[in-house]
Length: 330
Image 1 (cartoon, rainbow, N blue to C red):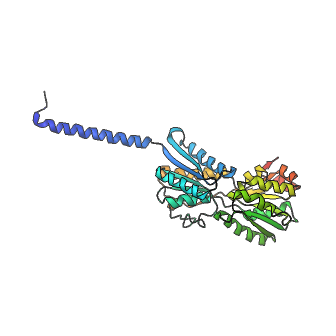
Image 2 (image 1 turned 30 degrees about the vertical axis):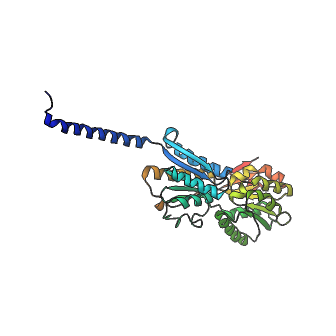
Image 3 (image 1 turned 45 degrees about the vertical axis):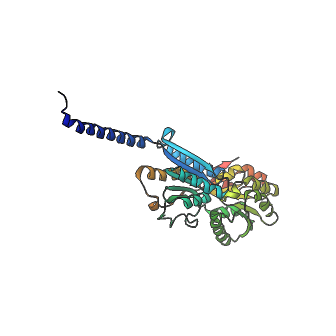
């Protein structure tokens, strides 16, 4: 039996509505299956920051964010803030779902260009001093993540454990990095408590690191390099000076010890990256708001020693210190 003529238009309209609904639902399914886009911006390439990035990606991969499920846009500013700003603007234009900003300058550049896209930071010493969050407990912005605030006091005390007679410690840092200024202030306080004299050697770019290190020769009993991105990116220059002049070199993180520094008490940047990845999962899967997610820290630190560096720097490491080491590099 055919459809009455008077009801034909109603049927056509009904079929049209069904078609629209099918298309709409199909669109939702496609959107649900669309890969997550994550922009990763790093101020400079050096092992500690590289490991933080790897830890973040590995943590997300462990929870299924790999292959077709995620698209990473990996960018490196090569130490240039203007480039970091351009990278951040590119992420905004490409409408990424999440941004990982590694180190303070890239975190600042990214926070400058978007208040909407969630930003996870890592390897940022003091997010409050950097102007990224209102407070550690309650960020109040689209920024949260992990801090790499290092145990500066313990690192300077390590100098006395290794070279008890040392009195003057040279510190290399870039005054243009907020994270370094925070550590410098901590080092000044620690030096006073430990009855040490801190000899400050500022450096503005990686090409000037070797010259600043050389300027410490004859003026100090040991050299200390905090987690300063500029100096660490040219760590080999400092190591060369330390070995040539037999000056113990204490680093702010373990990767610099692996490269040839003498020792450190430090956190693990790979673990820091994985912890940041866990925070990202809360945002992606639970809809957590960065504004209410406290900045997190790694509680565990480890002692790392480089026995080969000790020989090259003319240092005899105490047996008790070697026994206590969590990581020994031959």
